Length: 240
Image 1 (cartoon, helix red, strand yellow):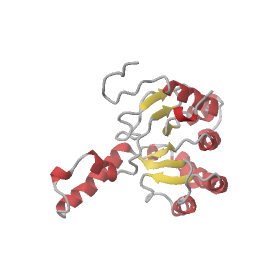
Image 2 (cartoon, rainbow, N blue to C red):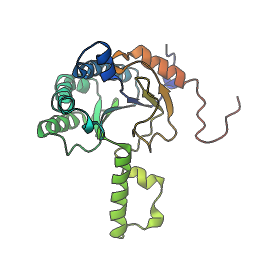
Image 3 (cartoon, rainbow, N blue to C red):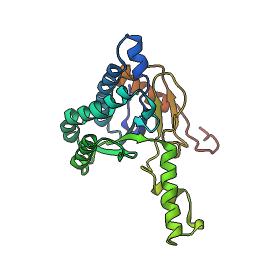
Image 4 (cartoon, one colour):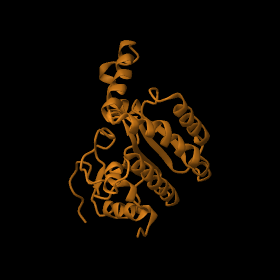
């Protein structure tokens, strides 16, 4: 178990992988795997909020996920996301959690966007856990958007090319918050275009547990593993 709250990472990011394979193993439709994944997400949001994690970022729907079967995409976007926001928003708000969306929601259906905007607006002044939902998000796309903004500033002569630095690029990303720990469930060992700028020095933790089976105990294991690491950020290992 975690003994001291001051040993917690401030920012945890999670690639919630394995819903489809979890369903396939149980001979269930993939949609039911995603539904079970939402139940796992509810538990993790409650737990991270209760132990005072400052930021939780989850990879909910990537820019590549549009390539999945139409029925699955429509279930995720038109039903499951709306259901989650409608059913959980009151509890989320009571727990002082602030919702923020990372990604481009313009292509989403009108009804989905309305529920997202409603949730963001309701929780915007909350001071507890910052709950980032990466939705229609891609790390490369995020960088391209930042570069476009900066290019327009150069064309308008509000900045010069010599003004470009890491701080400026970060300013125009969806979020400049850098995760201390990135967790990926489901057995794969890659970032899959998730927070590729912000995660440059994140500690990575991979588990074979499929996301629907990921419980707070699994999160504790990941945090305890994180606490065994010596974060060097490109420097030499500190002497004990």
